[in-house]
Amino acid sequence: MVDRTASEVLWRMLINAWRQLGFDQIDDEVFTSFVAARIVQPTSKLDSVPVLVSWDGSAPEHPYNYLRRCVQRDYRGRVATASWRHAAATGPLALVMLT
Image 1 (spheres, rainbow, N blue to C red):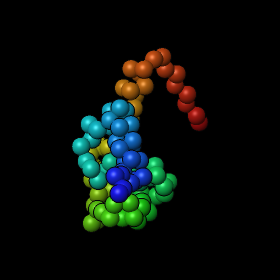
Image 2 (cartoon, rainbow, N blue to C red; image 1 turned 90 degrees about the horizontal axis):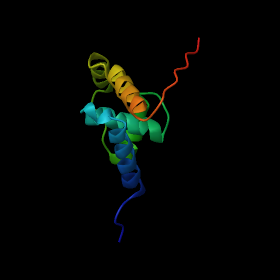
Image 3 (cartoon, helix red, strand yellow; image 1 turned 135 degrees about the vertical axis):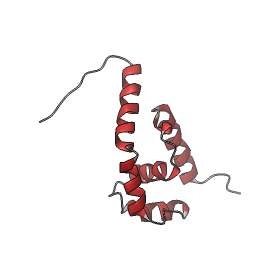
Image 4 (spheres, rainbow, N blue to C red; image 1 turned 135 degrees about the horizontal axis):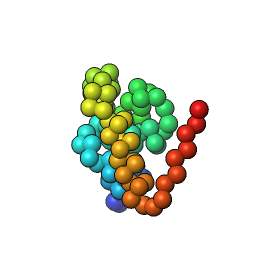
């Protein structure tokens, strides 16, 4: 009898890291799924839809509407802020800017 699948274990690991980094302040399961799919199989945002389907059989009905929502709700800025908070809480920082 199979208790767990490899994808379930991977999903739990990714969600744990997601929470530890403070990204769970973005309460959007679809966004979380898209990010996890792009970690598992690096690809474009739209090409991650088939990854989600192969993973758990689900995907947003209208990916373009979903992507628009990410921009409108400033998910990029919110993830950057959470990343900075996490990094600042763990010790000294150095900022490197490339031009």
